[in-house]
Length: 350
Ligand SMILES: [Mg+2]
Image (cartoon, helix red, strand yellow):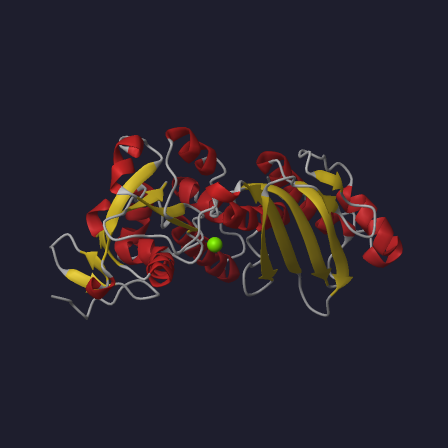
């Protein structure tokens, strides 16, 4: 997924909006029977029969959410779909359609937008979602991307953030902290490049964390896997802002507290070694890093045997009564209140 550096630059003004839409949406396939009408009319038409419809939107702004000096446009297109379908999976639903709207300044030629859409098309193929609409317009500065994801679920399968009960287990898929540390590497290499444009970065040893940042994947596999195992989470969220922020949302909306165990938080060895290199505490990074797009959920204790030993899942703690608060239990056995960004090492409970 390396950005094409061909020198062709076709001005967007020469194409006109409809010519541009035709070029960008060429080659997108329809994967879902629920898509009755996609791109090409005044509106898309979908039919979910007896299922419930799930909708989520995200807005990505150049300079705020992404930096094009190190994010290839194809990766950006892919990631802009991933972050949205991730929210659909976090409802225990299936993602089926997306709409993509972009605002671009005239510094972007057609070829750049084609790279962006190549990434979007790849994600649509991988996640089996249909591009059914969107808008393209101009911006005075930079690139803005808005993606809306649409999904479907049986009413009885939907999982919200507010169903966690005391004694439920807190479960995390995959491992976390990688996307944040990948970003630290990219920022460091950018700074090095600004000083010495001829420097050849040696980033081989950071391949996993760079991929976590540049080409994250949403956990499409988890809702069907949970169904197969006969487990319905009591609450669920995706990890976009960071574990601490997400667990606080679940606890607040469910009216409960929880205990997470520091030694249970799943970290890749590359996250641990890169944290050491940057002199950062890996627990803090896991709690406040974000952008890992793993799923965080709670299950009844009775369901533990169904997920036990499954390599996709790690039990990292349990839900308590609200009065006990939201705490991290450190390796030393101390109880530390979890705050929205990481945890406050200076305040100790108990
Ligand atoms: Mg979310």
